[in-house]
Image 1: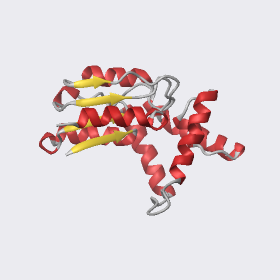
Image 2: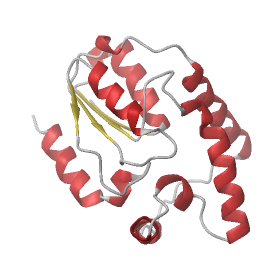
Image 3: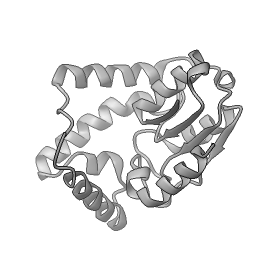
Image 4: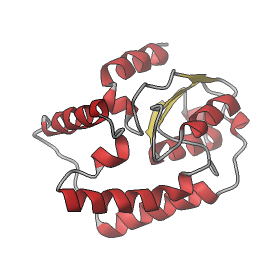
Amino acid sequence: MDLLGLSMGGFIAQVIAAEEPQLVRKVILAGTGPAGGPGIDKITALTIRAMLKGFLTRKEPKQFLFFTDTDHGRKQARASLERLKERTDDHDKAISLPSFRTQLRAIHRWGLHPPADLSRIGQPVLVVNGESPRMAPSENTLDLAARLTRGELVLLSLDAGHGGILQYHDEFVAQALGFLEP
């Protein structure tokens, strides 16, 4: 099986690849970082501020969390949010407040957790992030790729935040498909 982990899903993918390597062929880690990575424990506060800003400005909080606060970043946020509306059937259910709080606590704990031995992950791993993410700072991306035995770093997307794979989706999909080929 191949795994793609974005953000918190990247934490989970790291654990699965390390603990159950026989289940995993290749891994893509996007917009994520290693346990104990700098700034990851601050995601809860960033998320709450973005939600408050979204409420006060009547804008989607994802715009503030996943994209840069530049003209280009704001334009890409709007385009990404519009693409989400294209799916008209089988929408994901909205996350419940208790589940959301649990998720934020888990992210906070991941940020405080001692660094893991990533050399245990022997599968090929593609690591990608935007150049200016608020939620998982780029230094985590670089550290993550360097500590993986078979880590391959994709050049950080210019003027992209935590949602770099959403902002540069065409380029990311091409890179991901090339990486996942047998």
